[in-house]
Image (cartoon, rainbow, N blue to C red; front, top):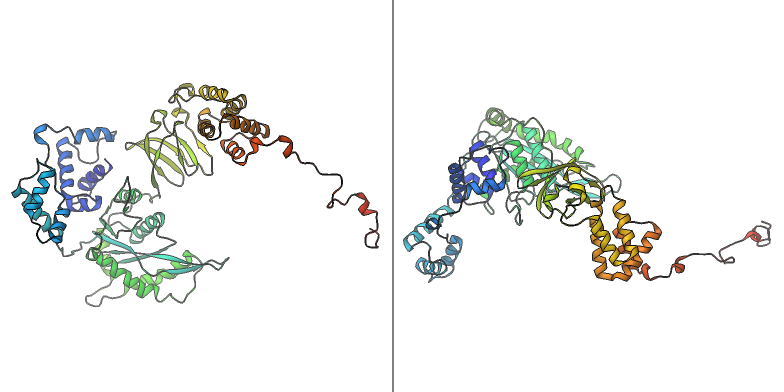
Length: 513
């Protein structure tokens, strides 16, 4: 459903073509047309009605098909094409018969051939690149790296060079970051838009790992954080095709100019921080954009002022705040774990999968595209953020797991286990925050047996530590089986390393102390 929402935004708000939408979302043109047709039939444009969740949207767009209108299965045209190229004796008729064996209700032979030829006619199309003002920006990383030296340790680290260029004017931007990670990739885009003072209609990246997720269960195409950046700035991300250098020729040329006119002149200088390096790059970047064209009048700067700057979209009122998206499953204590801290969600969502948006200050939790919880970020291990409104009445209606049930389980194991569980639950601000530790004790029972768990809980109570990790440590080191007296330390009255009072009155080496 997230792709359908993005499709409607690109089609109705940004007026993108079906081909551009298909490339941006990583789906077929026919799929884009089908989704757009279904949305039009249901009366949806953009923005969608407030409060419309994924379940309602899916029900409106994909009603059950009547038996007479079940679509015919589409052949795998790439497989058909490869088979025709691979074996000399393979014909379309043979492949159609194989297709019909697997799908008896499939296309007839004439329609099969017609659809294959239409598909084949699209795979080798070469489009002449025409760049409109303010339309496209191309981004990529340079191959060579700058080096930054740590003042304290002398360690030399390579830093990446990010390059962006506008299609119409060739106006170029360059930035340096410590890595090609998602945060660095995203914030380089933010600085690029601020450098130009506006936003292009399209951003064309290479298949960078931070931009395009090649293998992901939940987002097989564009990274969710990168997509959110595009939504914030009102632009569209249109990744270049793999192994298609014609799609990003502007980026390749811009990278070459940055390497030649910025990186090469700075090759013999030593830099101790990214700030110093950016200050050194700034005048060389300005000179590159002021350099006159060889085959036409003007420069990148003058063309930018005449063409791209007036056509760029204005920057949003607020700067983009970096956020990461993750998947999480709600535990039985109606909390999710994010970076070693726990955050509550409404208790009916226990065991459900949710989307989590994480910024430096907040953690937002979404279920089926609807925000169900928001918390201030908790920093440090073992922290809790629990909203009382998320709790079941009297802490007793959460999937059958209650303090009384856990204490009763402890009594069946032994009196010390019961006392440990009861004190553990009482030590938490909310009893549910101790559920996970109690469930960990149940796992230790299966691993070590009731007798050893009872002994470990007794020792944990004696030393005053109330945590699952302490009991696990006692069991793994065998302290539960050791005699208490074995660990009572006492020093002898006489010992080689004990001087005693006589040392200071008895002559040592012929001298008086």
